[in-house]
Image 1: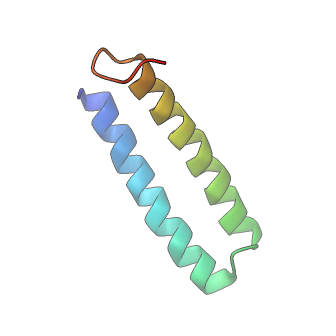
Image 2: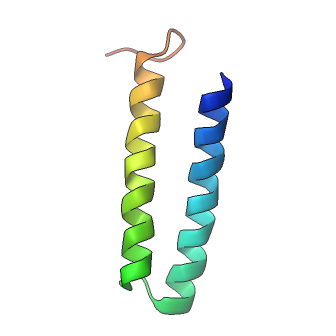
Length: 60
């Protein structure tokens, strides 16, 4: 795993935590919760794409 992968994983973890905090404080359907969730979805999709294309990933 390279440095960029580790940074992406760290960003995903930070967003997960922030989304949980915001959702509990402002509600799961608040604009801020939805915005964080959408950003997290994009990063998770990118992460999955990177893993599928990596030599050690499971190519389909």
